[in-house]
Image (cartoon, rainbow, N blue to C red; front, top):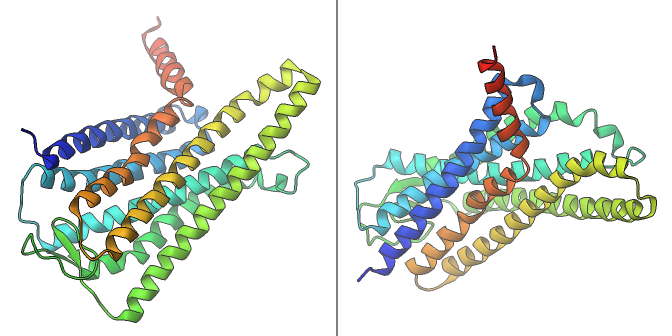
Length: 309
């Protein structure tokens, strides 16, 4: 009979494998467009390339250790391995948050009416994308440098000390002031970007609602066809934002419940790990719906040019 841990390992393997392949496929498409078809690249491609890269790394460095443990494998993980795994987990998780927020901001500015107060940003926002992405990587690596300092390998698999710990690693406790500052910084950053996503979502839904009412009155096929790609992309971003916020708060609630509880439950931890990997797994398949033109038109047009006499 299959144990619960093995069954969880099978589900997590499927989730990690499917999600990683989806993100790797999209990342390859964006890199293909950037390197081979530079004339057809869009400003949003850089944002989505970073998002899929962060998602793929999150799934890899979060999923593989949990899969190994679920199948009863207990490898010797040194301090350096633990530091690298937890550091990449935390950084890429926040890069996913930052990039999703940036993408929602970019889309909100893109669909803003020309007479709105955000219209001046339309020409400038494309130039702000790359500096923003670089800033996200730098600031998160600086914030989570604390993880590198405090993370050590668990010498005993049953070792459950105070502080954060996983199957193979633990984060040692330090001065109370340092811990409070570290957690406060993370909380403020997360709250800011989640609030930004929520505001962008409300604004985009308002714009879409106004456009829908206008389209009903005017019934102009030209204006509808012109705006449909932007509105399709907006719907995709709204779905991503809703998914991210839902999974984020579910994950946060389960983490708080687990940490505040008197006894650590690995079953609850497994469920939390599965939920925390849901967004990076779902994300590429939501995006693929809006990237059919790249995956079909660009590849086939290139092949036709190469093989045509």
